Image 1: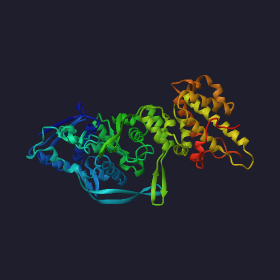
Image 2: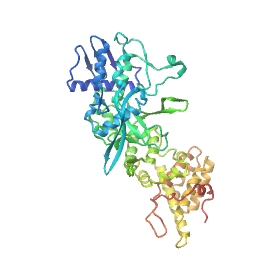
Image 3: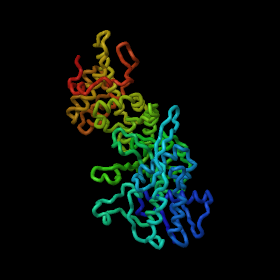
Length: 516
């Protein structure tokens, strides 16, 4: 029996190519470990493909290959192609949790020995991690699905379950035989090895459905040998539990693609793009896991540069809780990475997404990082000047509040901040935005940047096609404003100005929003 598999197969998706890479890596690892191979079983490896040959009973040969490829080590999934037994415990647990949270979500795909909790050390805190311990899983026994009763390799297409191709589900339960997803036996075999080449991240999204707990990253592979080198040299083998957390699908994809925060890594190892997806239940098909989102992400030089700044300035935090430590994700990075993954400006849509006091409060917790991003990101000069003009207007507005506040009274900066945010939230077209900005700027007084660059900046206010961009930039300016050095009548604006505001306060605010 001979099976020839090549990356040039026109029917291959990203997941098929990942599966071929996983098979390649497994066979290469068997060679490295000098495992005794059944007589008659041989293979040939090239940069673009794999040729499998064996003699005798097909089922016997496949059972040996799968038993050597998919193992269990101390209750954890162990993959020969990754030599995962040699990974640090953090990486082994993430691999195990990631596969169970994506490919093997359904309980029918594995047999559990119970639940185990371990404490993983992160800097100064301990994080409790709970996971299923396994007795077996379906990959180990898949040879029976590839062969007939006589043990011969099938020649007709077979139905593929969602655990083999995540998101490929039966379209109509009542007509499962006619609407199920099918693959050739050869393609089904390589899909079995896809988890070896994929990457897994725990999601901590504050905007996405809470049930989407894992991001599955599928690399685009165009050179099997070079990709295997990347996997073998991957620092993820020695990464801590925190390194496998992402605040969004975009964050997960860009973390994988940038690797060392540069596109040179992706180019060197021939991984130019990747798909990233989540799986979850939807109201119309709660009985099965469905792809709830999927991106195709490419790491351009501009995207990588912006993402590098984003990761440096908007970091997750390790928090020591009463019941153990946990990781607090960056809300601002989630917004930014979703835009970068879609090829949009990094601040795009912030005014639509941050549409409540609660979300704005979360954003202002990271005002320092946002302010540094504005300074460090290589972006359009006109957009930077617009934010600068808004910062100046906010400063002068706060200055008026400080000047009009009597000695001994509490400065009311937070109320002004809420009024500005609420006013921006009520801008639903170019006309209302133009009215708001003119009122906002005129009440602030003389704004140097606005006076010097008015002919250019006015486009972001007056142009009907750009008013949403202007609104996003204005809200970004408000969320990132840090203020000058503290004076006798100014508070430290790095603290959150919204903690004492109520919903009633917000509802009572309207234009004009500042009483002279």
